[in-house]
Length: 496
Image (cartoon, rainbow, N blue to C red; front, side, top):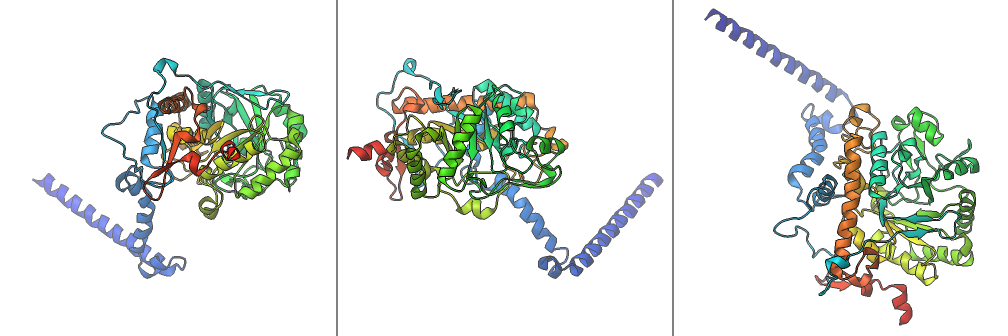
């Protein structure tokens, strides 16, 4: 009994000490909160005011896992993310009982099933499509679905390595993003599209302008198939790239040609391009120096501006871009001002048919390939883009989900918990390249397979035969209308 009494006495003393320590901490926090002048809530409600910030920070977590329905979250809901997850794992993507999607929402695309679709043995895959037939080294692109621009620096080393190896496995291209060509883009041996941003990372001279010598050096690599001149990005049109200082390591600084440990803010546009005439001059120059197809990436702001672009191209067809990547205003990025993310740039759902019609009106359908980008992560999104007029579709965040992204929304803080957008070795350990590259490949392969399934269902043998007449768009009235009536193609308008 003596031992038990002593144990109880020891625990009682410990408990009193703990209460005293807790009271001391509360007192210190009370004084700190009352004295500080930065936060009015903490100053007026010492200690208790701190819970507001705690609950606010935990709100994202609780909404994502407990309160939000499968189709409610933004920017990507749970149903979208889980489809990618199952595809990346190689699991069955069949579902039971019925759709959880509210098809009455205006803008929802509904595919028109054929009464007598082709038999299973009449199903065909898309053939490779040539981009830049007039270039010295054209590119015969094997896949209609590919990896959009994500730079090394914004993404971690293991993430880029996994994307490269996965792209090779699936037979899709990998866009470098504006951060230059790293050894990790090349590691897997996949086809690479080199993106030239406004800061000319990887091909810049000491003054920040374009270096033809470095451009030739990149072009000599046989894995680099095309060059994409980035004019604008969906999440931040009119704003250059933002790479926080904590992400600018010695290695990244060397690849990009910038000072180590300093935040890198790209110009909001190419300083040497102030008109469409200048743009075509640059495209012609890049094609001459590299010998490979050259295109542009942009965000549509208005039909008038895009018409001016095509009018300029029509007057100088030899300098026409070999492809145009249309990024929607709903596109994403690691870091961008909220007003640009929310309010600037036309959605790809409106922009793609518009640009397709202008291209066809000016007779450039066999000269300029269209690439669609911007929140196109599931089979229905990709099939819609092909029906609307795209020749290719690229996705960035879909492939991030295939790597294991949980939409933690910490891309700009170097604290990504899955190791995808961080350079902290602690977090990078979670991204095992040997496992993740297989997920990347399976996701790409499953997207392609299910888009082929949609194409088969509407009565065509392969995805590039999808047309606007194969899609209906839900209206505010609660009834759907054929897309070719809402957004008629140029050929249909010209025949009237």
